[in-house]
Structures are given as structure tokens and as C-alpha cells.
Image 1: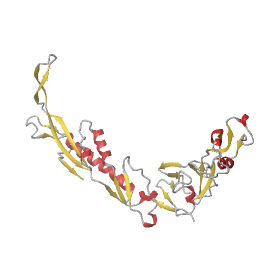
Image 2: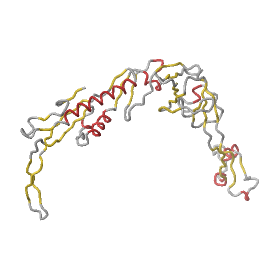
Image 3: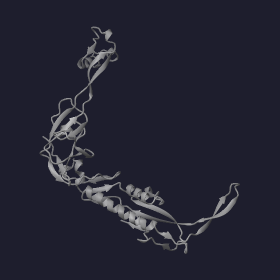
Image 4: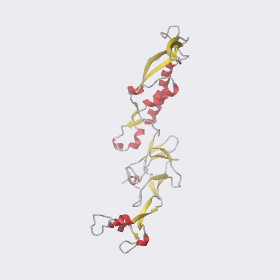
Length: 312
């Protein structure tokens, strides 16, 4: 009996199918109830009945222009051993003929069959292979249940963990449609901060999961000079004046997980969260320490205000 399958009807009118990439692996072509020829196995490419390739979306998901009744799985051909030949055909004899079929070769090299086992056969013969033709197997998808939903790709490094209904507990391919939580997004936000403000030190990120700890150095305005000891070419110490900088520290709480009704909502919220955090960080790093009071006051940026700690 064919297992229940589902089709995700995408908002743009396409239909998404979760399809196997292998013939016999878990969730493979045989599990779809397809009539796979005996002995045929290998990787699969998917097309419509007219030969139009399906569009790959993400892991094992493929899109058709719309709802269809039949899909075609093309199982790639492969090289198979068809017989065995002597390395030196001119040495053929009644005991060692020029060729052996697969059955004879296996019988004579099976060390569990004492009457036929001949250790010399392995060294005397070489396998002869031929390329098999690809096999096209139709798959009936007309009875698959329709579901509506988005097909977002989890951001790099992120993991979506959902609680599936009991009847779908073994169907990981539908997790994106159900409530769950997104994790692993924190490093992406930290990288976004680094990309926006390369001078900002976010190297403390890994010290505490779920937080970015940031240090910012900014020169005083008006400029303040500070004495710095240096050595000249002869190694003699001298004191020079260099612009002084003010350093301050703050942290941004990224949270440990984003909970949402489905993956699409989680990805959308992550975009909003990233924008809010970039704005919050910007309000701090764009401030200028006041040179009149040596940093006890700040010259604010054109927009925004001070943000010492951001909790979201």
C-alpha cells in the first residue's frame, strides 16, 4: 500500500514535491509504490511526463509548474559486470576457459563450496563491464494530499526543529509547515554587525551563547592628544603625541531560539530581528566621545540615542 504523501502548493502557483534521490534508500523510489525493475538502482533525476525537468528547490524538494498526476523518475545507468575473461586468452584450457559467466565465476570463487573453489581463478580472470541504459519509472502522484505553504530555505547555519502531528511524526519533510523553533542564527547576526561596521570588535561573541559582546573605540571630538612612548631608530625612547580614543563596551542579547508557527514566519522574523539589532548597534557605534569632557559626555549621532544594553 502506498504511503500517504503530500504536495505543497506554493503561493506562485507551482507545486512542490518531496522526492527521493535514490532508488532503495530510506524513503526511496520503492517506498513510493513505484514499479522499479528488478536489479535497477542508482541516483534519480525527476521530470514531467513530457521530459521537462523539475526545478530543484532544496534538499529533496522539487517544483512542477502546477499540480500533476504523474512524475517520471529517471534512474541513471551504471557500469555492471557482465562476464569475466582471462587476462591471457591464449592460455585458455578446458579447466580455465576464455570466459566465465557471472554464475560460474561466483561458484568457483566461493570458498564455502569446497567442490568448486579454485583460488587461482581470482588472479587469472578480469571483470568485463558494460554501461546499462537509464530506466524511466512513472510515479503516480494524483492521490497525494494538497497542502498550502511556503518553501523557505533555512538561513546558513540554522536548524528548524518542529513538533509534527502524530500522523506525520515520521515525515521530516513537512516540518517547515508546523510550529517549531529556529536555532543557530546568532552567528549570522554577528557577521552582519561585522560587515556593517568593520571597526567594531565582536570577537567576544563565542564566550556566551546568545549574546554579542562588543567593544567600540572612537576618537574624541574635538581631538584630544595623549602621550605615547616610542623608540627611534637608535633605540632611544621618545614621547610623541597621538590622538586619544575612548573605549566602551556593551552587549546585545540575541536570544537562544526563535519560536514561530512555521519556518516561513521564523525566517521573516529573523530578518526583522537582524534589522532591529543593526539599528541598536548603530545607535551606539556612531556616537562620538566628547573631547571637552574626556568622554563623560557624548556627541550623539544625527539620529538615535545611546544604547548600553539591548535585550530582545
